[in-house]
Length: 181
Image (cartoon, rainbow, N blue to C red; front, side, top):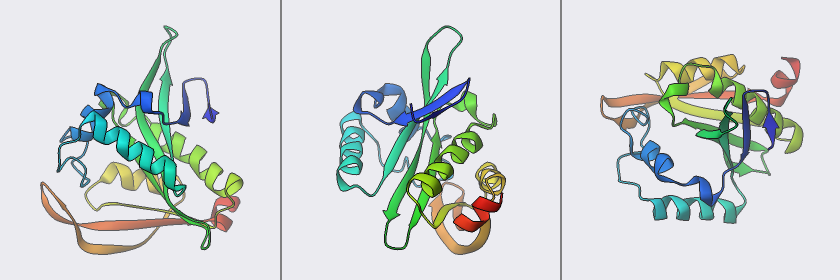
């Protein structure tokens, strides 16, 4: 476990985590309605290959998000990652996938986002963390704002989703603003 509290923890995503539930998340239209994921079918072997590629190039860290159950079981409910780690400019993209819809709107993305920001700034010594999301993804916009990220701009009609072309909203958090929060 990398970070944890009484209810949740994150740890590196492992090949064993790429099971039928995981692949269903990647193919589910509702889960992916604000992203370009789900346009092409995802199969377990493809998901494993993507994970192996991410592990191999050293420019991404992906954690599995787990819910601790009162029954002693642990439930993989999503992932969070740092992508396109740029150690020269000390910048990284943060991205989430809360695949288990039973955990939507419960503050999980914000909680694990705080943990991963701590990792980015304090462990990796990065200068800037950024994220992008569809302009109609109100939940993700709230998460970015709760994490102290500031809207820095938008890419007009940068994302094609089922509802049509939408803007991509770009949020950023600098180390100095993180330290002040």
